[in-house]
Amino acid sequence: MSTCAARRALPSVTKFSSKEIINLGREVMLAEASALSQVAEKLDANFCAAVELLQALQGNLIVTGMGKAGLIGQKLAATFASTGTRAHFLHPAEAIHGDLGRVHRGDLVLVLSQSGETGEVLGLLPALRQLGVPLIAISASARSTLGKAAQVTIALGRLDEACSLGLAPSTSTTAMLAVGDALALVVSRLKGFQAEDFAQFHPGGALGLKLSRVEDHMRGLQACRVARADETVRRVLVACTKPGRRTGAIMLLDSYGKLAGLFTDSDLARLIEARNESALDQPISEVMKQSPTTIKTGSKMSAAIEILGQRHISELPVVDSKGRPQGIIDVTDVVGMLPEPEPAPIEEPTQVRIYPMDQYAD
Image (cartoon, rainbow, N blue to C red; front, side):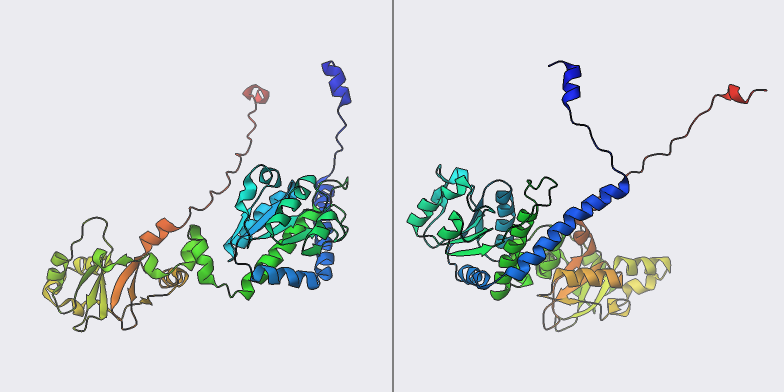
C-alpha cells in the first residue's frame, strides 16, 4: 500500500472542545461510580462468607486473574500483604507451567474474572481442586463455570463498561478493585490490625518514618554529648567532644541521672556575643535551658516531628519513664530521612516577539 493510500485508510480524528473533553471524562468516572454503588448494594452473605475464609486463613492468599483482571489482582495482593494477610499473585498462564508449586494445602485462592469463563483461569481449576484449596471468586455471575467451582462467589452482576465501545475493561475492573479492597480492609479491621503493625510493613518513606518509634531513629547515648549539670561550662565543652558529626546540644544530668537541662550551640553563641567570658567558669546549670521539651521512648516519630516543627527546636531529648535520657532526635537526621519533595514544574518562558528595527524608520 502506498503512503497516500495508507493515509487515506486512517480514520479521521474528531475534534472536541475542552468542555466536551471534560464532560467525556466525567461520564466515564460517573459511570464507574454508579456501578460501584450498585455492587455495594448487592453485597450479601457471600461477602461475609469470603471474609470468614480470609479471617481463618492459616496459609497464604493466592490471587490470580488474567489480563486487566490480573493487573487488579496484583494490586489486591499488595493490599492484602500490607494489611496483615500474607498474599502473593499467581499468573494463571505461568501457573500451569510450574508455578502451581507455589500453592499448598492450607492456602486460599482469590480468582478474578468478570466473565467467569477465562480459559487460562479455568485451566487452573482441576489442579486447585486436586490440591484441596478453596476458591473465592469475584465474577459477574455465580452461574459461570468459575462461579460454580468456587466455594464462595461475590457476584458483581452485569456491568456496562465505561468504554464508549463497551469493550475495554473499565467499570468491571473498578468494581473488582473495590470489592477486593473491601475484603482486605474488613479482614484487617477484624484482625485488629493497628498502625504499629502497618508500620512494620512500611518502613520506607515518609509514611514509615512517621509510624516508626523514636528509639528507631534517635542517636543513642554513646553518640550524644552528656554531662553533669554541676560542672562548669568550660569543663563541659572540653569534655564533651565526639568524633564525626555531633548533635548541637549537650544533655545535662542531675545527681540522680535524670535530665535536668539542655545546653545548645546557640546558648554558647549567645554567651560569646555578650562577651560574658566569666560565665564559662560558672556551673552550666546557671545558663542551661531548664526543663527542656522531651519525648518518651515508645512514642511515634510523627509526634517527634510535630514537636520539632511546632516548637522550632533542633534537638529533642528522648527519655524513659523516669526522665533519664536515652538518646536524642536531631532535626538534621529527620530531614535526611524524609523523601525529597517533587520539583516544582518549570514554567515555559514567555515568548517575546522581536520586531525588526527598520519597521520603526521614518
